[in-house]
Length: 98
Image (cartoon, rainbow, N blue to C red; front, side, top):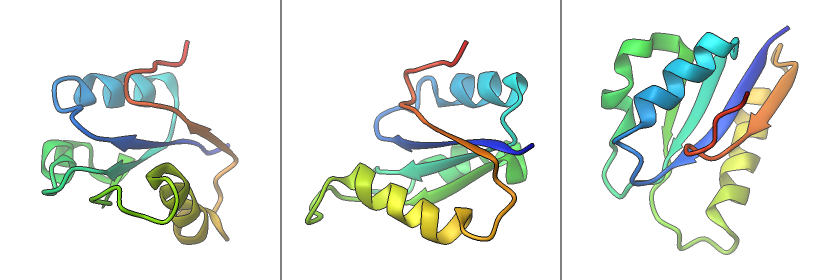
């Protein structure tokens, strides 16, 4: 079984590590994080987690539809198709699964 999380981060630097540590300890295999900052922020901040956190820089909100829809489409087409992912949770960084 390979459960993963997909999330978008903007202005989450103060507690992003807590979010990642908690959900990896809970059993999620990978967190796919879309960095919505104008300047790439989270790849360096979360580099110690190695392949457990995949960061994609996704700046701006000037898309023809909401940034979350664009990021989810990107996740499905880039990471999910043909993978061994079994479950996906799409949650906000300020949400913790219990």
